[in-house]
Image (cartoon, rainbow, N blue to C red; front, side, top):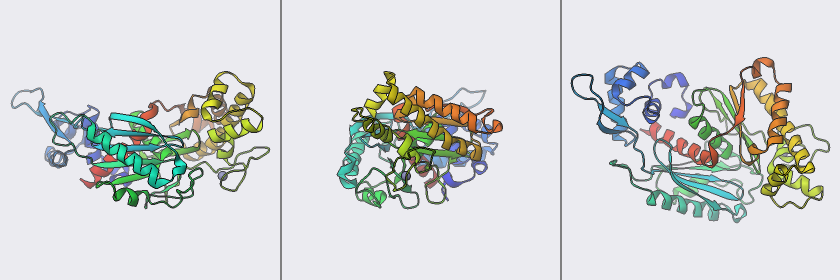
Length: 390
Ligand SMILES: [Zn+2]
């Protein structure tokens, strides 16, 4: 069992929580950690020593004395880019080097041709991430500097236990590809793979609202998916497909055909790719999602109507999710999150279709973490793994 799979209550004072308290500034000393966790000073000391030996915590000078010996201050080694992260999209990838608190040290966006296949695409991105980590400024005073792991987000379904990609919609040549095995031949550290919506959920939850236990994050870009945080941790389900709403059926007449072979799937109605297709069929010469968003921003009648229809479709599926799961927050991210007509009709549909008890205190908002939310989530996957292994 990894820490990620442990019930939240069992984590009170667990290594990850101790690290988080130090990383967020809630604790700067062993005494603070003892007070916050309710654990005895000797237990806290033992755990802190283990974390220091693993390079996950460091002692940074001396804190303020309340009489007697001044306590040594604890800190998460910052500035050292020791975690590599890749957030792969349909046309671009965000690649980053992050420190052990999940802070981005440096990152860049690269154009990607997903149709070039997994070996070419992942080979190039892994080389880039290794270069980024190697060229990042060294940690101030810390002995840690080497790569500890790489987290990778894939825009398609990933079987969690194996790291294999299973039947992705728009990734020709990637079906069944074993990402972990491929990467193991190229980097000598743990590689953790998940789908992009899960990474967005984890990144968004850890950077905002980590105090909330139940959250749903919708990623609406070229494709559409969601990630679920339940009892404070990422909920993947039995195989890793939890939260994948892309092929849920919505009311649409006519029901557009979907890449999965069915018709009327949420992805065929409400994804960025679906909006491009629908506009083209109406004779509007638009080449990509950027063009669609520009038309909506300009108040184009056809594009705006399609965005409203997409928002209703997302709202219909989300209403089922909210009634069933009762989250505290629903947040939407991805490139369509800034599309006001889509957001407004999604929100209206949610309020119309949900039980009052489910929406009474429900927060509905945009994911605020920006373009690095995916690599931040990827880094946290790695950090959790490293802490669990320690
Ligand atoms: Zn489908």
